[in-house]
Each structure stands twice: as structure tokens, then as C-alpha cells.
Length: 263
Image (cartoon, rainbow, N blue to C red; front, top):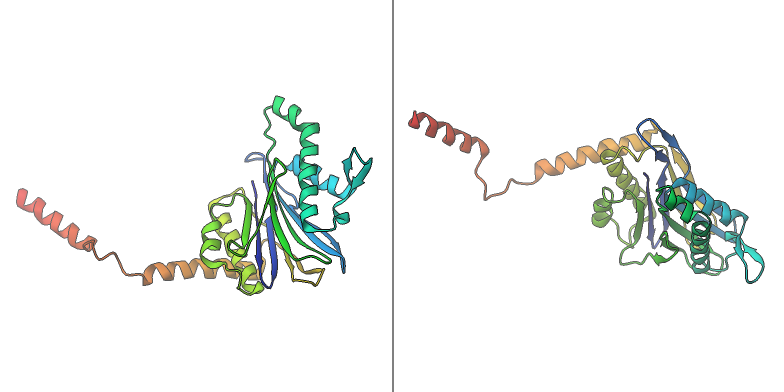
């Protein structure tokens, strides 16, 4: 189980990923799920992964070592991609290559070939882009209309992003909202947990603006969690009760009076 999120706004890209893997209540481990491919001045690419850990690690290894092109007799590494679209295609090809090797054996062992990726970043000469790549190797691209993509255990963190994220928001606010989304997921699903890896990329800088790991007990994230919980409680208290429902105490008194009359 995992949760990864990418937010692409006018000011830049935020990608976050937890590090928890869960193969049973007595087998919980920490593995990095946000991988950065960076050559300052030429490209900065980040891949977040969710699903079967063995499959995602095989895909990442192929992208480092090279995906075989049997027709051309060549290997293509992610760093060789000339556009973000080509990079997304290469990730899809790597997924299909791993499936050709391992898919049937995994199916025979009743293991699902389940994996998905977020690919975000910029290559010199092109724009900053964000893609979500499915386990069949096909993909979609983030747009200003919906400037975020999620993989893994996404349902608990999505309402926060739906309400708060816009393409025009500042990059610091995009990071803050992403962390609130992560906290909401962690509160509702024990399969998602710290540490959290964070990446921030600004347009045309061609290097990572921020690479950071949030460890358990990190002061800012702890404060953010407490403030968000307090803000929700305060918002709930400040909203008037539904006008079409009587005060519960009045209903209780009326019920007690009826019971006394009946006895």
C-alpha cells in the first residue's frame, strides 16, 4: 500500500510519496518510492511508483540500465529521452517488458501484476509536464483544469486536493496542500506512513529546487497535522446546525414527557 501525489501549477511541480510497504501486519518495511533522475542544466525527472514492489523496482532498474529496443539492437535509458512525452513512452515500454518476462509466472502464482507510476519533470527545450502511467503502459497527462494526479491509496487525500488545488496557486501552497492530503491519507489508512519523500521543481531551472525526506517527529509536519485537525474542528463548530432539525435536547425532553404521560 502506498500514496503518491503530483501537483503541477504555474509556478512548478510538487511530487510526494510515502515509503511504507505492507505485506502483512507483521511485515511492514520502508522503501523509497520517489526516484529522481537529474542532470542539472539538461533534465530533472522524478518517478513515483505504487503497486507491486518487485515490479516497480524492475521497471526503475530498466530505466537506469536501458530498455531494450530489439529492432534497433539498442538500449534506451530514461536520461536519453528528448521530450517528456518520449520519457513517458519509455516508462510504458519498460512496464510491458517486465510484464512479458514476469507476467505469466506471477499470474500462475496468483500474484497480481499491479503497478502504476507518476512521471514528472522537465527536459531542456520542453515544458514542465506530469504524467500518470498505468500497468498496461498507457498514460494520461495532467492539465490546468485538474492540476494533480494520484496513485496508490488516493481516495482519502483526493477531497483536499479537489477543494484546494488550482493551477494559479503558489508552489509553496501546492506543497502544503499536498502534505495535508498525505496526512489525511495516513489518518485513514495504516498502510501509508512516514517517512515521506518530497520533490519540488520550478520551470526552466532544470534542477530540483527541493529534495527532502520528512522523518517521524519532523517539527513542521507534526505542526501541520495538529493545525489541520484543529482547523477542521473549528470549521465544524462554526457552521450552524441544520435549521430543519429540532434541538436534540428538545426532542429528548418531549420523548421523556410522552413516556411519563403514558405511564
